[in-house]
Length: 379
Length: 227
Image (cartoon, rainbow over all chains, first blue to last red; front, side):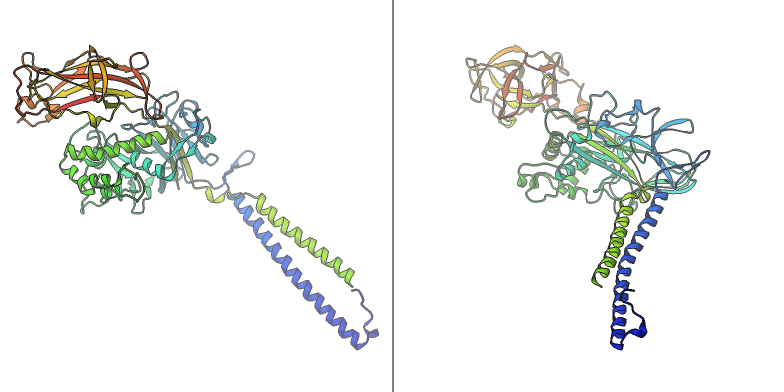
């Protein structure tokens, strides 16, 4: 210690001074130690947390001979497909994700996700497409419809609940040249996105014999429940807050369980209005009326739908379902009462007035949206 | 003492700074993948076709509401009335069929002719002149051979199972026998307010009658469709 003299040689004055100095030094040392110590502790925590995260990560840690697999997903999702090349969608170049991994489950080929590839493109085949097969010129327009099937492949037997998130996103591009990568497209603005969600619809069920849909997947839908497989008690349902849940009581691992989503761009307003009674050129989206006895009926008309369809936010020229030029005229022509009346007793003159607004919305949608992305996310 | 203190302090400071830097590096270098491991996603992209509208207009691409046929006075010298309508679209080579449907309360005869905008044309409608061309090739799908009325052929499609329909309320359907094509060769081209050019086909609908038709306040409905 600098300045330390032999105690005996110090005067009482100097002794006290020395003690004071030592105390001060100790104090400042403590402060420094605390400060540095806190930083060191934080650094230590960061390193520990990082290590845990690294071990928990998706990357397989391979050893020689055996492979050590990090804790991965309880299931993977897949679509039917022989190989990656032939199942590419025509517009996959506009997506950021890559194709999945070819897998075989019970002698059927799929293109699937895995721990290394959790986000993939949907394999497009004749039975599963949105008019986007390879080398196609076609696209969506009013009246287009189809289905997209995916499979849940569990890795453990027993009970499994999977939350499904299905979204449609609209894109457009500037200039004359068609885009060739995801950099070339931009999302459409929120208002047109709303129009897209009101006109290109997703359903969980479709009855071909009655040309009728069920299980509407939308913010404007009511809760419903569909049984997919009675034997294993697998249901697909929408709860009150809009979550779609695939719930299976008894599933076996390494088996592929299908879920089909039906998409449709209804050609005319009538599809939203009519009940299904016979096979008709135009399908019925909500074939039954809602009833108190069967609250989760997937075929029922959502209770507030017609009121929602007529909602106007002042100053706008369209909502999710209709587009208008004269707000006052629209308000008079399209009311939830009239929409409901058409359901019971179709009157061509009144219907014609209202459907003009639906068609105007279709036209606007077609003019302002060039591409549509369907994304399935599972949790 | 000061110098020694300074040295001490700078050593501590260095150590503190190093610790901070190491902590930051640790946080930056070690990526966190863990929490995402349960999620999976699958996506696809498709395109929306550009909606080329096929439109019907009155006269020279005027709004269809201007097509006026309310009162026809059959007592005059001229035993026919001409109106001009058009079919137009911005899509080149768009093919379409033209269809006419009408009831037969009044004994009118309907004929459709090709037309062209012509300053010296004999047909004047909505302040423009047109000249008449050849008759549009087409035929009635459900006309009785020996009368003006319709057969039962389309009763089901029109009225479903309803059977109390007077013979003259059964609509007659007339359709072109071959598709018409909107393109540079066949059609006129017109520009409408700073939009793309439109290909336009003009038609004259001639409603004619003979002495059997009187001014008796009968009404008929007629539909013109292009698809």
